[in-house]
Amino acid sequence: MASAAVVRNQLLRRRSTRINLNTPIGISGEDRAKTSFSVSAKATNLNKHGAAVHLGRELLIGTTVLVRNKGGTQISARIVAQISAEQGTLRTYGIEFVEEDSNKLSNFWGIVFPATT
Image 1: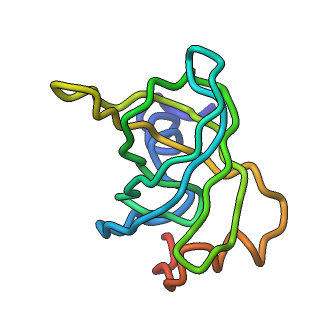
Image 2: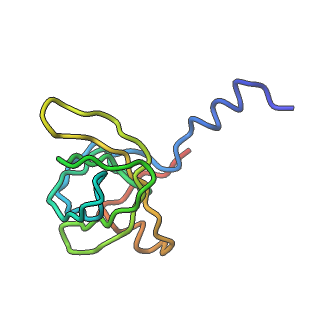
């Protein structure tokens, strides 16, 4: 039987390394008020499976949005968490890609991620 520490470490292990870069993105979908939107935003803490995105819309956890990189490639992502809400309207959300195409996933940010250990 695994110890609590081993189980906790497995749960905390990330699927891929985060890279502390900022990149412009486009994001579209429906906000909390069920209003369609398509806006420019910023992605930070990039990883192979998602990022943190900063935008001025209130989104619902669990909804799917379309994220567009600076090269025009689009990928579907799920809103998994609201990380912060700053004064005014800027909010930060954690997103997780829901795309199944591994080539699209690994090339979306246009950078090479270090191997996870």
